[in-house]
Length: 492
View (cartoon, rainbow, N blue to C red):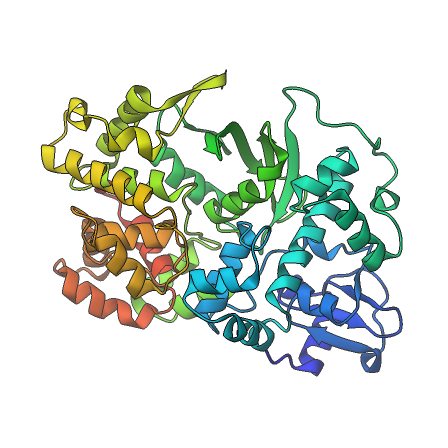
């Protein structure tokens, strides 16, 4: 990635928050790297090198600044729009793809060679896949050191390190001091969260952020028993690798961040939980770039201006979303939510420790694959589709992973009996985080276009042609149109 030195230097001189997360500043004289908003005195231009990612700065031998804490920068995709393979690889790395497997295994999942994947990473990120994965682990560990009172051994495993020895070695190598020495005054070292308190973390994003909009979206689609939206707080239950837990999310007291409280009996799944939170709340989006592109279209101009910081709400789990999408075929949002609630009540796993209205975790694929789903009172064809989705997930555990390009993803999903283009595009949009996914057959999108332009309602083909101008951000265009559709939308 090319970084104009003079432009970057002007940005750090002004501490321009718009560039936070877009690049990192390496200071040759001190051997550290900083965020563009670092409060320290701006070094001379001749003493600075700019890096597209924190991993690139780390691979150059620099250590993170202890003042601006690069681990707290918004998780920006400086790579977005440059390489789909890199973007998919980063999503898998965030989910722990390199915690217990080599780069070659990750490359195989992506359908490329290990050498090619390393080349793409160096081209677009300035660092190797291993360096990116290790930088993520260190940044998460450092955040846990600063923001929690967890014992160092728990932090090591919660941040993805395979051993305490490796954890200590990495911190000694990067900071020339043991991890415990980085703990700030005011934290009592060695205290794990008390029972029932949960672990609280701050996750940052690039402003603006339409929090009300994302809460409204999740509220009308909330599944009784596993999700709850009250005021500006979203809560849900989950089951990951056999471990049940709960999370609650609300705006943080600090600017441009959310506050997540996590209850889990196994801290080793913490990176997976954080990855899902980033996906659900679309924390890596670049709202300025998206708005600048979509705002040029006459149809979307006013919609973009009216909803600054709009996000595309992601899915907590791909299988859950696929089942929810099938339930929403040809019915209203309210009807789909009611059916999903009935499904959870009948086939979900009761929580060992219920929390108010959160009483179950979503049914596992094994449970639904063998169940008689016609008892839910839906058409037999739809029940058969639900069973087919469950069987497909069991046969291919990576079915809902973001490892293929959009066209391949849609093709694989449509191979499941009963899954059409609308459902496949919707799953790609919310689960795979494909920014260009677009369910053109959605009646709400057609209705919104007709209302905004005061024209006859387009069909799917005409809408798809109209959406060409919105590439590569058609998923966000769809979200703006759904917001504009004031009538009762079909289930999604």
